[in-house]
Length: 614
Image (cartoon, rainbow, N blue to C red; front, top):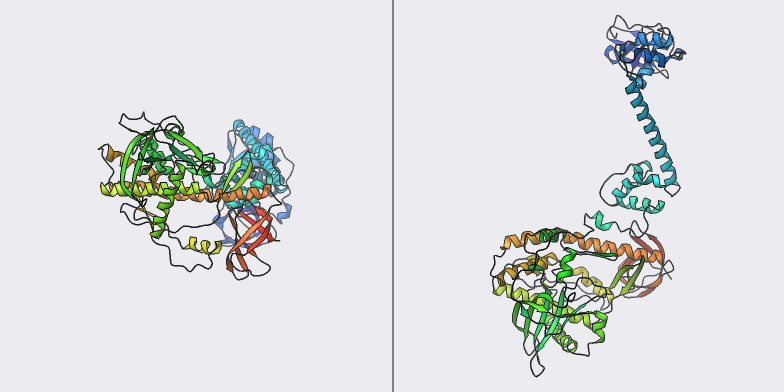
């Protein structure tokens, strides 16, 4: 039907799915007029003949009255041609009826095919197509209604499927969102988060960052074996104190003091939960912990690295008698460590908060323990230890309300810190002495920096100069701690690197097979890759809940300390919030100046808060 013999001037043809009128039929090409008057030169094969004509104008293609449904019923399940369909449906084959018939075919409900061969659908096919069209129309109505509600800042229960798509982007599971695209918004997790807040699908209690970083938010459910039969040193006669933040649920270290008959302290004991007894290398629980790197501590709760059963069975002080791996540090006259003992043990542990321990520092054994901690700290400082003295806070969520508590520099914290560092140094020395491959924590000295002040601004600059610590199987100094060697040892319930140290020590003590250096570093490398995300998620979560605190306390006012300057712009540290902000002050102030601030605006999705100077 598209040969040069059948297409001539005045013919009606189909070009790009629309009607066109042939103005001139050449030997190789046609000049056709399209709707709107546009003239186009095309090849014969680019068009389909609908009617040979003559047709004077496309304006003459007014559809005639007809019986399309009757024609379909007569033809159902059979085939015909465009002239046949036009005659049956409209009583005649004219340019107008040919175009009307083709539009019916193009619609696809009753017919499909080409002008030369048109297939009439069966009744079942027509019914299915009608149902599909009805569903599509309903979906389109629902979509348009949803967009209108979103524009009004609200949503209805039936909108959840659309908003779940936005939620997937906000959680970092998808990279695209039809909803944001339709609304003309950039498809980013932050914009998705903002939209969910605007319509009320999320409220400010939703912390998306762990999921956005691909971290699990539920505890692992790996089985734990029965404890192995083994001899343990009985240290239950010693007063063992597990000192931690109030509300801590995973106590994994405690301290004891062993004294001579005359009351002279002769040995500092650091007891650590004997996690490796139930979590050997490559066990299901070990693999789960390795995949997490560390427990995830969020203001709204903790996601443990190990199955909760591990803490229940191994946490120090959660039962009357606890299994531990104890590090005995024999002390010389100066308070230094002269000899090291490492042994599986049984301990009777009393749990205290830092505040409770602080109140009892004038009582034994805490008084002597603190004195020993001071001696250990002095030795580290002589070896070049560098500490950062900046305000710290603890952010918690209690029944939906954010509580931000400043952490005062309690002596009890110094006591625990020094005991744990001494145990880490002892574990490293024990490993070196006995040729045990363990991950040592090392750190190069900080970059040379001239501190601008002796106050918070100087400490802020010093923090920037610190180099990242590294894990290695070669014992090397940890400059920041002032230790010639150090292995993280005292938190095997919370950190996978510590668990690897325990597994190696336990294997040595039981004359069992140990992992070689390569296997140790492969495990540590896998865990540390995830642990970086864990620490980042914790930081983002603290920022999120700090901003929620400001939303819950819109009249907040407090003090900011100038710690850095960039021309007229200053960076301020807000001690009461543990938060940093940048602000254009009315006048440039010296570093360490204190400025009264009030919260001005909070953008939760972007994790920003703006303050004004009072």
